[in-house]
Length: 507
Image (cartoon, rainbow, N blue to C red):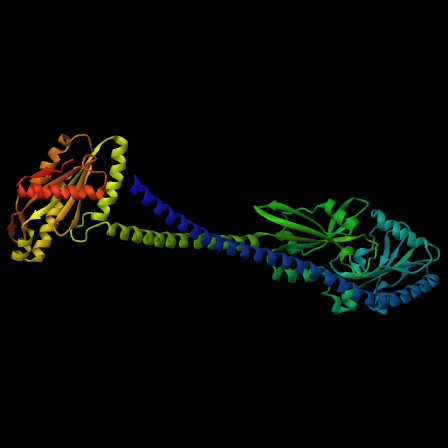
């Protein structure tokens, strides 16, 4: 129907506008959420870069300081090695040497005598006497070459194979090639200020500062065996983070390519990013160490970042939910107010029944329907006889109540396919549609007319009132709404003048 379509179209437009505004609000919230997540990820990435750069800088700094210390230590070790060589020439029975006195003499230098079988024959460190290097192919080859040589050799400062500490080693072969005189010094003993310049100390500080670091460990890669061993680690940290196994292939690739290797794994429902950073990638200069290359392993967990993102996601959904409730309520109030105001514009303020504007729209729809179905419409015009006298005798307040009661009775008496409206004053107009002959509605006309047979009780007054009904028919009388109303008005006066209950207009 036309009226329904008009209302539906306005409703659709309002709803469409409301949805667009709502979508814009959601989009703004999502953009804020997305930007916040990007910032969290960026901070996470920045933290990772700072961590790795700290390790790289620390390694380079350690290398620089180590070079300075090495020059000093190398001179001492070379001097001591020649003195030990002179001692050997004087007394080749190395087992008779007093190692404790020699260590005291050379100030914190540990002394080792390695025989042709690559065993430590004697040493200032009793716990290492009898240790064999023959089962370490690469290191064994290095020792044999140095034993067969004629010159003093020293290694760079590096981590001890047995302890998590920086050490320096030197080697001097005896002229008869029977022994290799080895010296070692713990850097922390000679240079305490370098004690904390190592990955273990740095890793503890980094883990305390960044909760998304799961572990930092150092691996030594053995090219001969094709596998790596954890060389340098925090035992407590290692015990707490034993769910992740090292990847020897990535460690080997890192050593061979001198490039950082990375992979992501899942464990215990969390994602872990593991990076392998080769030593030579970080060092200030590339120097091959006698014990092989080592790789720093950094394990990052996404638990902290996922918690932050989840928190932002919850905030996002809470904002959307709260905004939706408020927005829907506000939109409903606005739309309800608009349609309520529109509804009010169709209602007579006194009687609360439809007014002429609503009647005309109803007639437009009814005429379209009648044309489609080939049916008729009866327009009814009523006014109250002697209503002016009621106002004069009982007052306008009583008169208004009479009009309200008349409107109530008329509304009740109208059939389902009818409508009753107030034109103004004491005039009412109605319409009955969807019938084919006047006989179909004649009973309804009698019902409407009969409402005036009973008195109207208002404020303890019993007021009698009558009315005549004028009727015009569509399409017989006219196809114009205004002419149908005028025709019904003329018929009403005809009925009043002739004291008839109702009168039909002339065709």
